Image 1: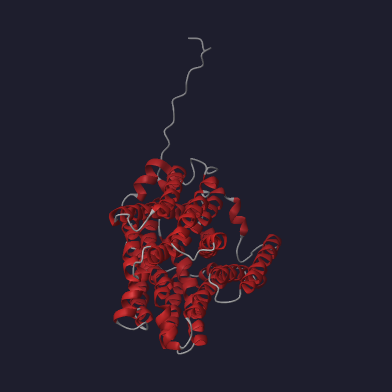
Image 2: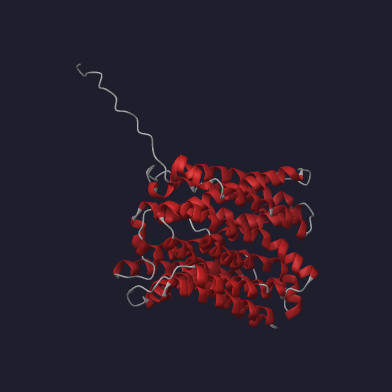
Length: 471
């Protein structure tokens, strides 16, 4: 396998993933500089995810219409322009708009980058390629907080965005030489009604959940927007069933492999979305650690994620998608629940060991899950699969943060106590139980699913003679 292709794509995705989390650590400094409050500035976080939710559905059509390689390179340029606008922003409105522009670039970078990988990689090598692509995307959110704290402490917050410029320029130039040419393919006219409904549905759900979990605005706005998003989703499903070429073709779910992969991945990712929100808060509010110390502890998960790429292909070849996903789901949920038993007296080596194991199982799940999405579909369906899977990913992450916030708020309401160490135990248990439910759809997965991708060969028992046979 040509590892250069997934590594180039992974660098772009790493830049996007890290940038979406690094800003959280620097919100107080940015807010003070542009004259607003950190809570109000969380609207900038929300605007980024709303832009992702709006433009991801059209990414597959854009890649087919104009060529996946061209769209991927343009997306990096848009992300760079958004980064530059963020660094130059001097007001809340300008910063929120700049983050929205960044989100437009990110909406094309992630799904189109995955589409480039799928179309340029043989199915038998897809798991190994996905491992190279998945690891940097998992590491980005983990190192975001310590990197953000370091840059903000020793430099200025502007460099959080300015460092994207040389990285992006290098990505545009190198990808132009290395990525294979992918000419446009004939596509139907864009489904504008579907685009409007899907954008309203995804943006409404993401924005509504973000406002409910991060009350920068009155909760009633979040609830109303969430209801509007759900209503738009229902209308989109009715619309997609009536036309031949919807912008998100839900007929993909007629195939059990991508249907089970996306459903189980969405459920499991809710838990994954909650952990980066809960763990730093517990270390800082419950243990009294500084943001930098907390970030260095959570970074331990990255070590497990890196280790995964050396065993993912072998694990799937030996056990197959179904068994590997069942193991990764159960082990991952148990390790999420283990966070509930951490105390300030817990030795750091124990915490690090649990987080490393959690990073390994999380990476094993998503490498296998992402490969399964494409294991039994052709290249014509790949653009639809990337768009649908990416929309589900953004919604599930928003649901994870909202669920974690509601668990902490529920403890406060029931006990009357401020959020402290005691609030995190029930929250982690709830998150673990929810993530464990991802195993239910996987149980319906055929043991033979994705054999051409995993390379797994089932052992067949020799036929037994009937006890009534005659010699």
